[in-house]
Length: 510
Image (cartoon, rainbow, N blue to C red; front, top):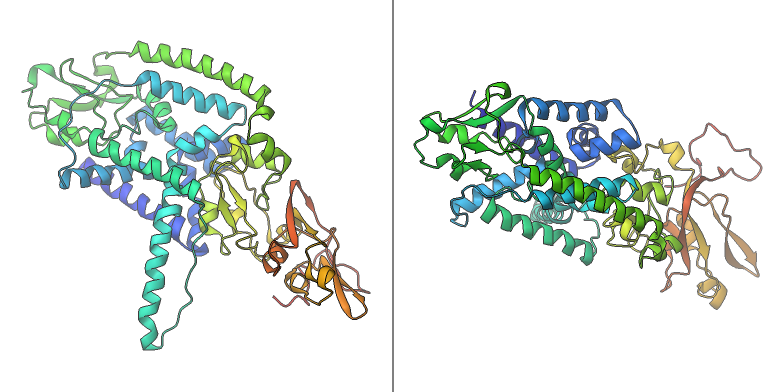
């Protein structure tokens, strides 16, 4: 079977599955999240280090082994951002934006310095460079910030057209995306659009850390592309169709560190000048020693700079504020440090959250936690009967929690501001906070027929339902983060002992 057709079919299926992963409902997102991220380089690598799991370890070994054998085919077959770029390149050609391309010199100093930065930063628990550039995470943000809202708006408009036929469906809501986070992602989208229209897969071979790492392995892959200079008619068709601009006709060489294994060149050559064969029979090609030197020098420099940065990290504006008042992190994230050092801001939890309480941030966690999500209780609350975010996190930033464990996990602590509360200020009954509290952490004290709310913090899990329900502006009850999550006490009805095997309170109406 034609290798290009195989590539198109496999990459197309994977892209569609990723669309379902980031825009589907729980029934699709959960099973897909158990498989797809395991075969994405950065999530598989981080999960193997942070929270080893058989499938992720197998996925990482598979990616590396395939690259050793076939070269960087991962970038054309498995990477969703690579497939998106292929579609953009194809579209650019169709509308006449993309001109014919030829070989271009590699930007090895830049791409290997970026790789060194990402690796050195990750070693000291600083994932911001990886979060911004990782193709999987960037794809997730593109789908969550742009594609999912579009699909939901189309769905909601479709519901309106069914009303005249007495068919009623519930509309869906989209997650709240702050303008700052949206703009950063939009800048990357525009950059990729420009690269695809003018320079093909330049993002993959300049900014992408996964591409740079796999490119180093691909230099010594078992199968490689080679040019037969004597049989070449110098028609340059292979150069024209090469998305990576890595075919050097003048020197009869293919830069395997940049080749993404699309196989377009094989089909374009009518004289079989270019072939894909075992490396042992290939002539040695340029080793790109300047790039290797740049990688080593850049790696040492960046590592030294980041170690100095880590030693003085508390002095950086934004980090100090984030440490003093950290946002509330999802149940299962254990503590703020673990979350910021393991989350790549892929926004899968944001897209899957049924109450849309998770909101992407720009620098709420400081410079070390760019684009990572927080619990936004001004917009929504954490559903007491939901633990989907702990099921789908690909990197282990949110560890798996059973529903019973989640119901007792204290991610935050509610505080009652009596100088704002209408009950204490105006001596009028309200009770909104107590009505929605799922753990009975809010009780009421009767004083002259006025019920004054008080918080029993041993039962509070910080779900934010009380803060959302509070009618005052600003809120008179707010939830503060617990930097380290704890276990709450299980509430039992007065006069009854708490049943450690019972899940929840049978008297709770929701």
